Length: 60
Length: 141
Image (cartoon, rainbow over all chains, first blue to last red; front, side, top):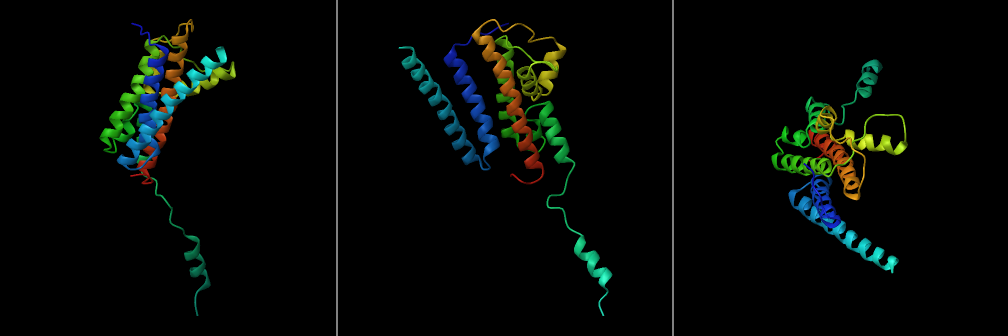
């Protein structure tokens, strides 16, 4: 069995699970864990969009 | 008159800052073998299950994307670093090697992503192991 993810869906899945682990391991209270996890997720996905547009500009 | 020998003995004895417990050894070891188990054994159920699902899914997705698993070798430095990352996945890495999965060549971009997924899953598990240890010694609630 194999799976074919698009570039974006692979980045999304990666960001989701890495953010969960970062949130749990880098903060002490549940509230801070959720906030930090969401912050990491937003930064991951934001980085994907910024890098994507940067590559689009470089390619032009 | 005070006894100088007794006074000297009292000053040299110091209490350890964080007493070592059996849990400080078992939790990281179990957490390495099964991601999240180091938290679950310390009754951090939700954290443990979330770690298990997150790290396990990343690793399995990496395999399903036909990612490559690295073995111990003394060759290229990038292979060694890949091996260290994969090794962090513990039991999943051992099972993958035993079943001879993840041995294909990286022929397309998604397979390369899969390889990175498995390495990152192992590295994230190292962080989770350190977290389980910190809980065990009382450094983290």
